[in-house]
Image 1 (cartoon, helix red, strand yellow):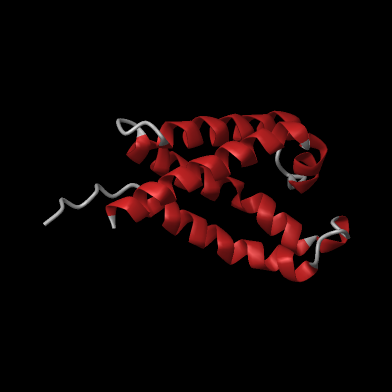
Image 2 (cartoon, helix red, strand yellow):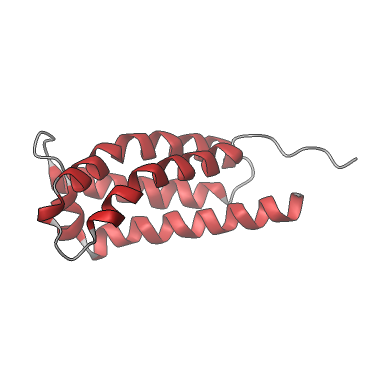
Length: 126
């Protein structure tokens, strides 16, 4: 299990580093996801991108990996309103299947569970 969890942590780190970088490469798309009731759309997109990159990188440092996983859980909860906004306003995203927009909502739970697994200390080998 130790090897599988380590590989999982590296994959999760790469996923978030890539996703965070994408916030800067495709900013207009991420800004379009923002619910209108939130202020400072561009700033929040950049901030979430920075935190995805930072937390993804911190996952790779054993001293900070559990803290980083908790941070990712908080971040996933924080960005959930943008996913709900996308799903409930699918007409704003005609290039994305409405089914995919709705599938993203429970996928957040899967991502939270994945991060939560990495908040738990590694079991000692028997």
